[in-house]
Image (cartoon, rainbow, N blue to C red; front, side, top):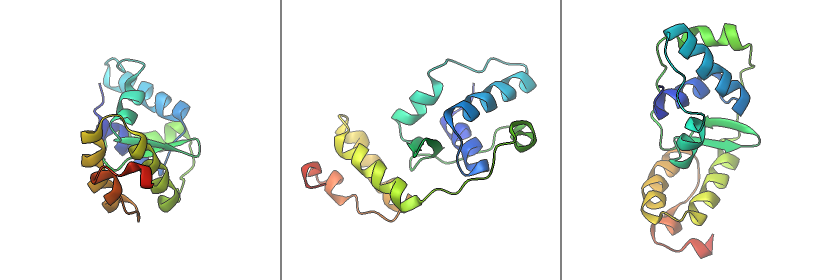
Length: 135
């Protein structure tokens, strides 16, 4: 089963992927490695920890990830034929900031807020200070 960082690495390889493309990449890698792809909710689990984020219908490596290419991932561009994509990091950062402001797990929000500021040009200090209503 792929780790959050490996899922992020796959997304990073293309810039971003649709959920369907990422699911297909998981399946292809599992097949090539002769192993199970893992549970269906695996992508959602990585989204819930901000290792992956979803923005404008695309999934990309999130602020809490250390993207790592899993073994065999170098073949994915030829297999998936997905285009390289660029995502507006500032807009994605604002979307993540809004999600952190609404996050029920305030400790997770606080931890990710530091990573978010390194990941995108946003100020997440209000999340750390517990002042989400200011956002």
